[in-house]
Image 1 (cartoon, rainbow, N blue to C red):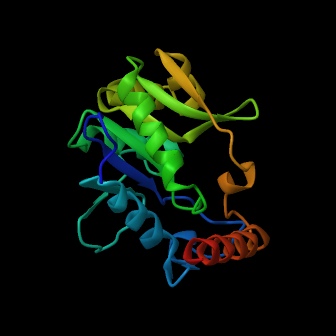
Image 2 (cartoon, one colour; image 1 turned 90 degrees about the vertical axis):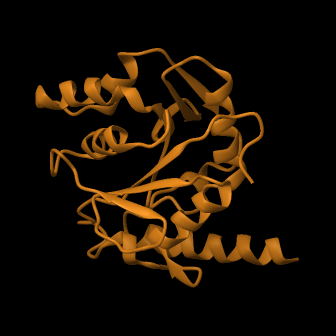
Length: 202
């Protein structure tokens, strides 16, 4: 079911990192009976999003578009800019492939907050820290993002600070925002994911 009283959104799953600390492609790591990439896509589909793009990785999953980076190996801003250019809706929910513990309620609240505001970007803020890869961006920001990339900087913070933006304070367990960047973090995410799955079935 789509968030109540909100516009339709596109979704961007960032899956183009080098996974150097993990030692293998994070998107393909097993997670709760599927892969991290498939798990994130399933979550987005459950939210009711009908335009899902994967940045930085080729895949043949149904209902998903794979968007190549216009500026390869330039970090998340390049992937976001390339997807915003191709987005089917006015705003894009952005999430990384390696943050599988983010709750559906959190994403739903983020979509709702963006729809209710007039800012170009709505992002989570956790204990004073910005979460630019758990955010909603207006799709028409891609020319500005591309201009920033042309300067050679490629800074997410520069994009955010260049336009009106707002924060949604995150008040749940900060560990649910963890990135699976290392084998140790991945094992911790697996354990927490299984624990959450068990509680959900009780």
